[in-house]
Image: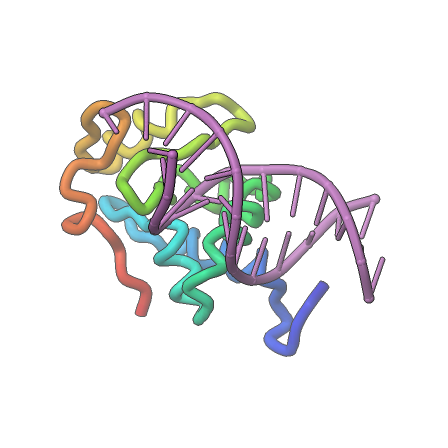
Length: 106
DNA sequence: GGTCTGACAGCGT
DNA sequence: CACGCTGCCAGAC
């Protein structure tokens, strides 16, 4: 399903996720907001869930609004480890000072 | 086109 | 403070 922009909502989510720089993270709400729909965070989660392009889309950089890492079920691979590797401090399964590491889409 | 699902969020209990 | 129910939106049936 493609819209006028030639990109489905899901595709947009993937693209934005891929733009998150190393050392930064984004929340489902942030991404939804970047798409101009602050309340589609639900759909964002669904979109990432359907994503299988782990090579191109660093979905581990997408966390919950409260700083928790979220499910990331599919593989069961440590999202936490990846973030730490990117320089994001994690404590008790949550991002420390989320606001400082939160990436703002431009 | 109505209904269900989901890698969520917020508020109530 | 830990659950549970409800609301939200796009995609799949």
